[in-house]
Image (cartoon, rainbow, N blue to C red; front, side):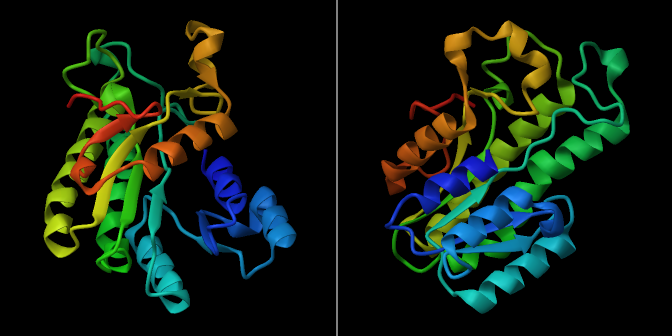
Length: 238
């Protein structure tokens, strides 16, 4: 999703510069290819690990040396499963403390720390957007199936962090919009093991999903700050 969003933003001539972050720039071949295509003045790549505050702080310092003003901050990290035994829980017996901690570090704490360190670059008095990729399963009122303890709870926490930050940031910059975005089910590594339950017409490719999300962002107003929206622009209940 992050790469697709970068591609969509670069395709928009109204975006003079895009700064993309990745944990290991030395192995970000697709981003490097885009940087060569568009030039370093249009696309810059910055190292950033969402689960490490020192890394976030260092990335903020790097970006701050390039510009004192951002108009859009997209936070795209998400962790549902990994190659080290982390998997969505089906029952209470599957809950593991280390998996809970990792899910919260990436899905909830990471986005909040991004807002903590980067918000000053968006509090310039004109329209700006902080958008964190969230998930519908973070909605407590929409939970009718149970399971997926770590992912559901960490996404619910993320949505609460987004709401709380939006309230504080409105006092500093009334045109700053802070929201969560649910991209739908996207054909990525995160959703791949679970796609057999998704009707084909509901499975989006990353470029389509990115286009939808940027369209939602383009139509936001200051009154929308603090909410979570799906890819079609419809609010998701807490």
